[in-house]
Amino acid sequence: MDNLNIQTIRDEFQDMRDRSVSAKQIWQTFLSRNGRISEAFNRIGELESHTRKEFGQELNALKQEIQEYVDANQETEEQTPIDLLPVAPIEVAEERGHLSLISQTLYEIQDVFERLGFSVAQGPQMETEWFNFDALNIPVDHPARDMWDTIWVEDKTEPEHQYLMRTHTSPVQIHHMHNTKPPYRVIAPGVVYRYEATDATHETVFHQVEGLMVDDVTTIATFKGVMQMFFRHLFPVDTEMRLRPSYFPFTEPSFEIDIRPPGSEEWLEIAGAGMVHKNVLENAGVDTAYQGFAFGMGVERIIMLKHGIDDLRHFHAADLRFIQQF
Ligand code: PHE
Image (cartoon, rainbow, N blue to C red; front, side, top):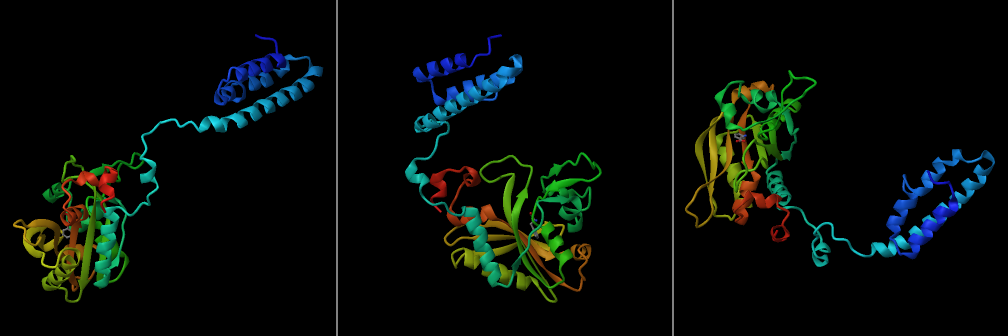
């Protein structure tokens, strides 16, 4: 091992400084946790005890000298840019951000329903089977469970409890009915999860807006009226809407809502809906003298239609050419 000698360390520092070694490297060599200074402090015990104090003071002085040098030189060095990540050109970076198209649309949808007397409810994204399936009249082993591609969550500490990422916003209906008394007029916007391969029209994570209206007399006519009013606000006025018979375990009868933009040949499926099934009201503890409707619509779907977007994956691609259009 070298002799413990402050002059040696100082010479080494001066030499590096004269050779214009970077401040960063000088810091590394002398001041870092395993640097010369720490190393010397750790070896103080090897010295004769009467020389230790003086040695410590000198070592501290040297440490301070090096620190000052590093502080003074670091800044100028840092002005040289190092390209670690590709970043957007400054003109772009200085522009102000804005809400994503998804958030903008969610607020827009919320706004229309609020004018129709609806309020907004929320529920958890991770659910128990009961909320996501059973309470919605989808018992275990019922083939209807296959309508949803489920992402299961394992709880290693309590294997008997099964959790899953909600496959639709419909469980929020149950939470809401559990927690409040009828009549109901709510929407529940939120993220849902499906175990799916992604392509232009499928994503594992997407948004739905659930709706629930339950009262003494809420009929299919009420339902049609509300939906028509909603689509008229969101899309061009002469957009057509139709109800097509369908099947959901939690509604009876059930429908798909299709819309047809002005001048288009094609009908496009935009939401699932129906009159709330008696069993669902019962499961949620609501008197079955009440009646009403529920619907669940795909938000990305609506946006794609409204703005003529052809691929779902644009929403998450973080491509400014896409984002800045909205
Ligand atoms: N939850 C259904 C789905 O995700 C949609 C729906 C909601 C249907 C409410 C009827 C009533 O496909």
